[in-house]
Amino acid sequence: MVREGRWRRVIRSAQPYLYLAPAVGLLIVWTYRPLVQAAELSTYSWNLLPTTLMVPVGADNYRRLLELPAVGDSLWRTVILIVGLLPFSIVLPVAIAFATRKVNGRARVVYQSIVFAPFLIAPVAGAAVWQWLLDPGAGIVNRIIGSDRNWIQDADTAQFVIIVITGWHFLGFAVLVVSAGMAGIDTSYQEAAESDGASKWQIDRWIVLPLLSPTLVFLALMTVLLSAQWTFPLIDTLTQGGPSRSTTNIYYLLWDYGFRTFDAGLSAAAGIVLFVGFGALAGCLVLLSEKVAFHDD
Image (cartoon, rainbow, N blue to C red; front, side):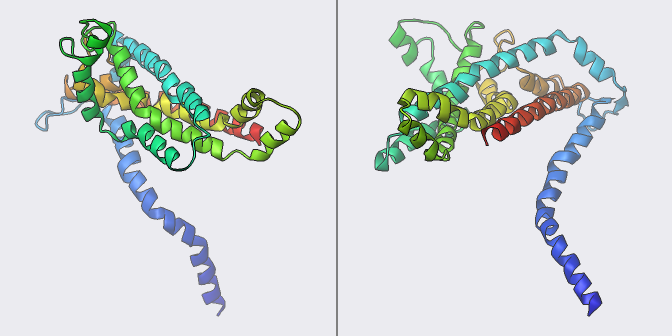
């Protein structure tokens, strides 16, 4: 009896881990194992051909990576991309959510469907539509503004076009996230402020907006970590990194090294550096979000 009771306690204590086991197993197989393999590959010189030997080069790929001017340029373009997307992921969603918070009933369902629709469109399909809209000869955009500019193939505007299309895709999702954050705010704070004579603007500025800070930090975290990946299908469809590499960010450069120049070791080294750099940045943003959430509580 004592032994049976002990086994039951062991089984009960192991139940949470058994539920987590499938997810942890998939995480190891699809995330951590490839990460270890990429770190190992970054120490070899190999052109992806099965008939070619992998030559150990140690840290030479990392040294080459630091010496390539294209890496620094692509990092700077990635920074510009992130900064350019922040208005679409934070500023505009907050403005739209505040402006439409009084919309209720069936009108709210219709409004949310319209706002969220671009997020459901496949990036390649969206890129094809935007390519037609921005066509230098027959595009609607040039007809409206009376221009014949080739927005996509002009080095001065190509990055701007990628930012706008990506922001258009993500805007609806960000609006719904902000709206959900506003819905989760306890209305007693606003009612107390109203009873003390606070205006609507003062309530929004000093109560609602600070309480939204964890939501806004989350959106900023997504923008910083995922913006380069969001733009990949658009860049590959519209510009292929051009013109003159004006749209080649660090994520697209990583792919370029691996599948255009067939330098698997250099591409793996770029991936590891990208993982470590963005991981450190994500850690800082997560700590910031926890401090903001704790301060709000």
